[in-house]
Image 1 (cartoon, one colour):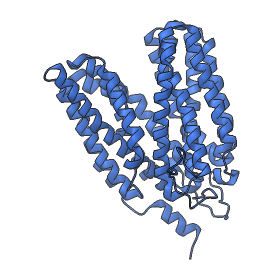
Image 2 (image 1 turned 30 degrees about the vertical axis):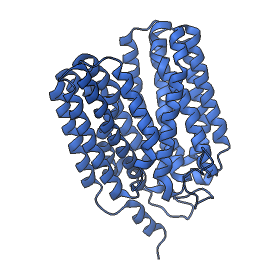
Image 3 (image 1 turned 120 degrees about the vertical axis):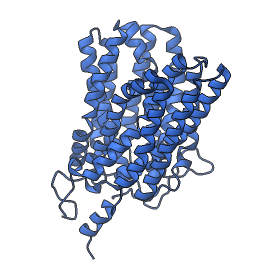
Length: 429
């Protein structure tokens, strides 16, 4: 894997700094912060804008977002392959302004058809851009600090989402077209700000570009693997996508369960989200410690899967007892759930990188991100058909799914690390 010029730099911050000392990682952290603040502004108000200002029905919005989510599933691989050819940085310099234009375009939507087309375009850019950014990080940062760096970036992103969501409260209180559009303008400006920061990112084209399909590396070697034919990688992607159903549990299943299935006050929905965000901000870097290779990553995912299963069982228990007991169970469940999320995230980053062909990071990251996107699309349906519709029994079923997926993943990763095999082929003797 090609790294930045500061190959010995570690992803840590100086005691007197809030930002990492390494200039490349510092720039990536700033990009993540700006982008996530903009996302927080937009995500907090978008549904209300579509229904109250544009006049779409909630069903129409849900249908449009579902269609866009399906389109997003198929965006990762082609965008990743393009990044392998032209370079991740070069492609993102184009994607950023296009995302800004798409967000601004919502201000001019006045029909369902236009809404669907624009939402699909925005989602394709967003999902594809995520895969390309992951490939950029994979090639630009030193391999030995990769997981810790990604953990830091995720912590910063969650902090940015909290800040953005808090800032959007003013627009929610105003509940006006002007207020909602202002949030979208700020989100568009965040995409442009990220693009400006990206332009100054200290990486070269050779650092951020791989090879074409079947092409040769800089050293003339051939035989680049194809992600869509890499059975082990596809299996690992699918199993980790099962673990990604935890997001739907948190964002869809739990709010509905709190309101419909427990005696806890509705305010617990916000409390659970705050607990989750704060734990990710504070502990994601710490949770990544010890995740250094494929084996340790698989073990982290297995432990995280058991914690996710445990969280589901605690959520089920919230159905019984008075309101205060239900609220306590929900908070404990959120704590256990989030610990599982931290471990499965850290493990997933390592698996997505170390099981990939380093010469095709764009395509491989596109496949892995597409698996996550698919989980995010079908997750609300899965969680609704189990936990929401069938109560405690449904939560037990979900717990079983998580508990089985973790050990299955540890079996799926067995065998020599592909990176080691490639290194032996590319650099014999």
